[in-house]
Image (cartoon, rainbow, N blue to C red; front, side):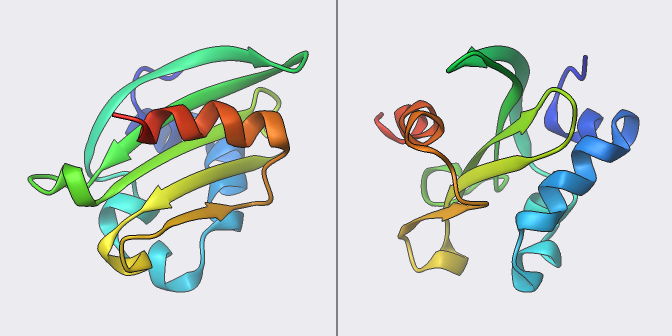
Length: 113
């Protein structure tokens, strides 16, 4: 299991590719989005609606309050979803990868502080 988001990129290429598939091109080119080169919280293994995911979050260094992303990748690496609020999204919370209602509810909790 990866310890931090950047470990997903390094040690779980299938899971990382699932994440990259949902990112718009402009976000892939931004280091803290596309390469997980940011400030991250430990990745957790979670169960949501009887599915197992790796859940993580990352933010832009020194600008976390306005630039934050949380993501879920299915344990088998087949699919990823995310929610992001950043300068690149004009401060709006944007969903990536078409999350289900329960996935959306899980990730939305990360923005309630």
